[in-house]
Each structure stands twice: as C-alpha cells, then as structure tokens.
Image (cartoon, rainbow, N blue to C red; front, top):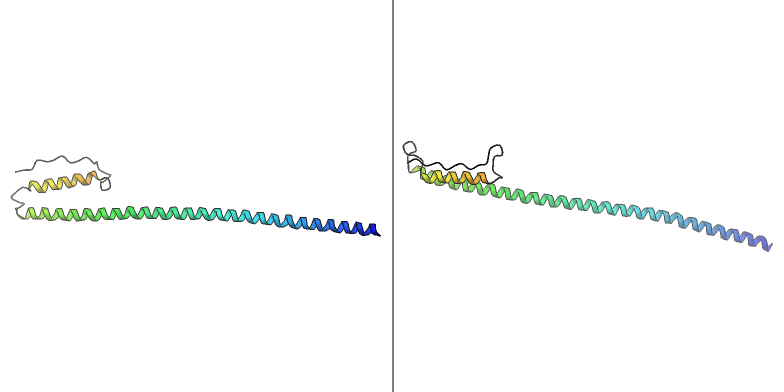
Length: 139
C-alpha cells in the first residue's frame, strides 16, 4: 500500500512539475512576443517622430525661404518705385519730344537692368544673362 501511495504521490508531483513547466513556458512565450511587439511599436513611434520632425524642419526652412523671397520682392518694388519717382522728376523738367533722355536717367536704368540680370533669382532663364553694353548718350 505504501508503494502505491509513493507511486501516486510521485506521479502527482511529476504531473504538477510538468504543469508548472508548461505554464512557465507558455507565459514566457507570450511575454517574449509582447516584448517584441512593444519593441516594434517603439521603433515605429521613433521613426514617425523623426519623419514628423524632419517635415516640420523642412516646412520651417521653406517658410524662411518664402519670407526672404517676399522681403526681396518688397525691397525690389520699393527700389523700383523710388527709381520711377527720380526718373519722372528728371523727365518732367524736359520735353521728351524735343530733348534726348538725360544721361542720369539712362545710366540709372542701365545699372538697374544689369543688377537685376546678375541676380540669378530674377533672371529670365530663356535669355542670356550677359550685361547690356553701355550706350553713349546723345547730346
């Protein structure tokens, strides 16, 4: 009788040990799978944050370029208006039909034209960018 109890008790202990081993490996596998899933999610989150930061930086750079372009356009418009006022003032004193255009006006227009052509942002890419040779003013 003691022999049968010892065999049953040993079988029960062995069964409990196997059950505990199965539970341990089962939950260990789930834990490893969840750790891999968490690691993958963290990696994807970091990549998404990097992409978002890169896009935000790009938008910031584009905004700076656009702002600089607008400032340059405003500056050019203001300078052009100032030149127009100077030229109109000079031309009001003389009759254009009778007298040639004053030297100061032609030189200022020529200098402005050459300055615009040297600035590659404002140059017309369909035409050559060589400077216009100075034309002797008529007297």
